[in-house]
Image 1 (cartoon, helix red, strand yellow):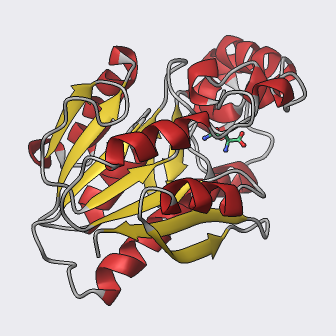
Image 2 (cartoon, rainbow, N blue to C red):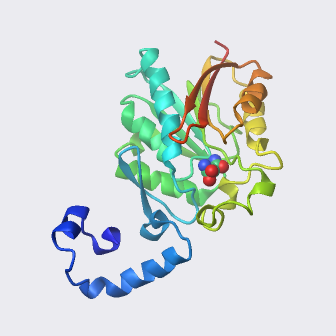
Length: 254
Ligand code: GLN
């Protein structure tokens, strides 16, 4: 309601009886969409993530607070290694709205990013969000699958890939199932298919690289095993606000 009427919570509290006025039809349309389980962020076309507002379209996953766990993990690793001001190169596989890579570039002043997605529509949203948050000059976007065709030296790979097992998708909350793109949710029969693909790509890397991944609840052991099988070493796990291990970090060629 505040988003549609373009007022803040304080204005609403000060004057709860004010007439809605000319925005009434928009508000009614938004309420009807909400009654159809559409998330507020989709109705407004934007979502706050790690303190910044990101544009979201029907073609990208709606950034979740859970994913902020992955940001914290990457920033802790970079801080612990004393590399906050280094010219790191970070790749984001399946960048969607760009929430992850744009947030990291905004936090790390000399880092450069490679935002990767199979969807050109998602890459366009990432580019827009990168421009909004002043990091477009340090970000390139590449339409590909995994790391196919990427030759940059990478210091950190981040990804929030689709990880929901195909058979569980029909049972998801309607706000997720009916409004997030299937491409961003469906992780194959066991939910782990994209992690296997990423591990296969990473096999070809020659230099030390961190691999920082968002995972589904309960997937930590299985995901770590997939990356340990290509020689990576599991280093960190981070818990989200719901108490689930939501992010893992492994290092390869260390
Ligand atoms: N975190 C999302 C959910 O549980 C799924 C996103 C994903 O598969 N990466 O709805």
